[in-house]
Length: 349
Ligand SMILES: [Zn+2]
Picture 1 (tube, rainbow, N blue to C red):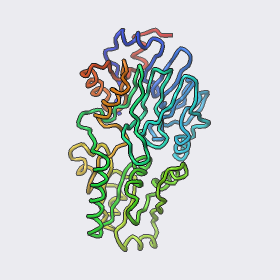
Picture 2 (cartoon, protein in one colour):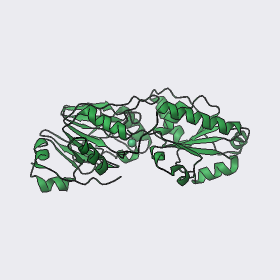
Picture 3 (cartoon, rainbow, N blue to C red):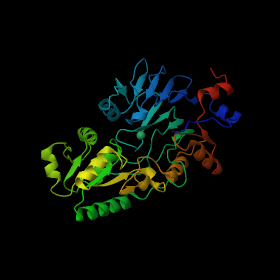
Picture 4 (tube, rainbow, N blue to C red):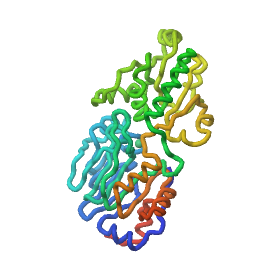
């Protein structure tokens, strides 16, 4: 993650944000004339509200203090399973609206005062049980730019599913088991959904916990058994090819090495970063597929056009580069300024 650095703050942009002040401080801090809200703070805040967009570890915190926590019930449950107690949460507050952001189960974007839209992590693409978010018309857009460089363009999901099925079939024909890897929350459930027709399929521990939570929360996933490190289970694995869904992303991890040695397993990863040249070899993988839970570069541009904002602030990943690209398209865009940057430019009270 790159630090957002304020640049070229103009008097005009300060004027337009006169009544709502936005800065990066312990996540993103927004001050309106009637309340304060922290967006994805890293720790408890003194704001009136704390918004937890989704249950990935870099977006959750242990809630404490007087802030009312805004998050979906799915995020509250999933964060709890990962050791982050968000306390009592709600999806409703005056002048605040939450929208599905299409990133993972329960992920939300937020519209504040009908003017400021913060995407959190977002995908505009429909995938398996997740519906993409196209955006919301707004005055000010605060958007993630994880893949905000022009070469990050992901293939159509159907094409990837076809390629992965061919990869699995080739491996199975040679008697090789296959390990499909991705983040245990989000990617692993998409993999489980897309490749549920293979048999047998086993889940690594952390994936099993997250898949079970998805099923409990009403997602239509097949209930695969857990991978076990017992001799009886090892004997079963030795009988023929199988599929395992696991969280590791490197083919050089201890688990990957052991699976290769014992079973000659082939290992493939699902990641947006696989678009980078040499990713597969650098990570020691048999194959890699460009599936992401984020917008790719073109989808980020589409999101901005859809929201049609008069001001864009970029956060995460290629914030400088993407803001620069938006300026060439005629948008007023810059990386989100820090609180210190704003304090230098304004005495807003
Ligand atoms: Zn995320």
